[in-house]
Image (tube, rainbow, N blue to C red; front, side, top):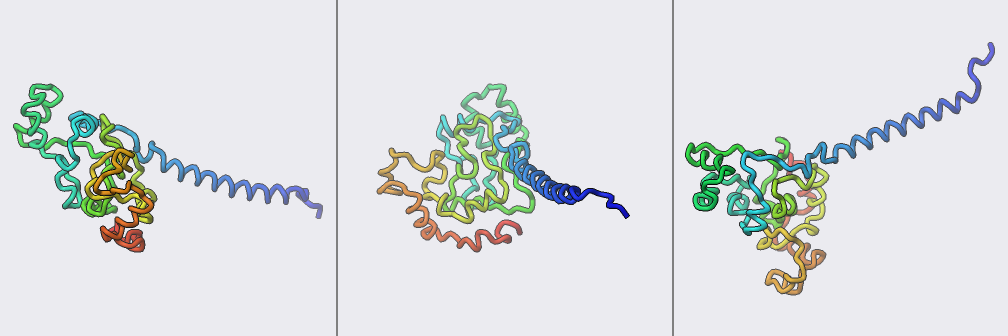
Length: 231
């Protein structure tokens, strides 16, 4: 019986298999990279709120400490959203007739809380405790970015597991003095070199490991255990 296919088809068959594998790998790589884009993670996408609260104005211009509004950040798992009374502490006097703040005044009159849009929204299967991180020397800006520069709030990080693990595997690279938790500009500039917290100047490579021991940060084996975050 005569040969149906030319011998060159063997080469074509092998080539097509190799190209198929490369194509499948390329598609998988593209999907993995697409999953990290702001289109999926919503990083750097400003969130509209019922009241256009500006962190840039309140934190950056007025110098209000994060803990004034997020009162439970040092003691509970959640940072806590400010009660309307917190807003009215200032705005019963300042801009008390502004139309922008009518929602705040109506909330105060009715006793109904303002329905804020959540910005940093973790999946339900992820457990995150603010107080643990804050009391172990993880600063607000490490996760939330420079909120003092944000007119509207947005994510600066993906909030994906690989991002969390980057810190959990190397906490000494990110830890800072507890007294500097709410300081937005970190690491410190030269003007801070005489601080009582680091009189010899801040050196992350030296002071980071020192604080890991001082604050009794859990070993990496615990920090990277699945049950630490997935409970």
